Length: 86
Image 1 (cartoon, rainbow, N blue to C red):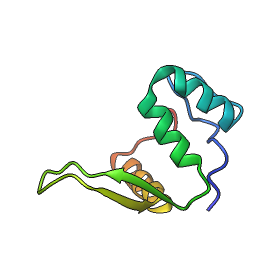
Image 2 (image 1 turned 30 degrees about the horizontal axis):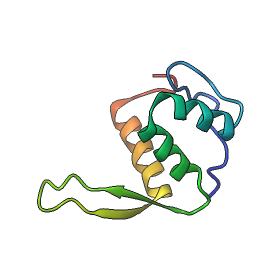
Image 3 (image 1 turned 60 degrees about the vertical axis):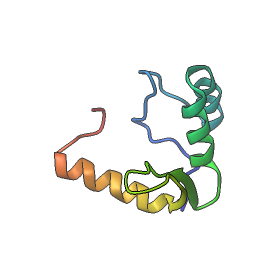
Image 4 (image 1 turned 90 degrees about the vertical axis):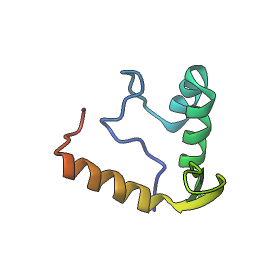
């Protein structure tokens, strides 16, 4: 899976980016949490570590496949009829 590019319609606070490096520099000025997530997302590893909410027990860190997260986001967008840019 290649997650080294930014989708042409991606915006963060209305701003577009020519490169991952540019996005990460900007994200660091916005939020440490956003920067941390995006750094992990664009890392070449196929897995990303996330923390569960702990709603049914103690919160824990789990590893999810990035491709599964993309599939879930696409399915959610399709279900709600969301178009790019919304």
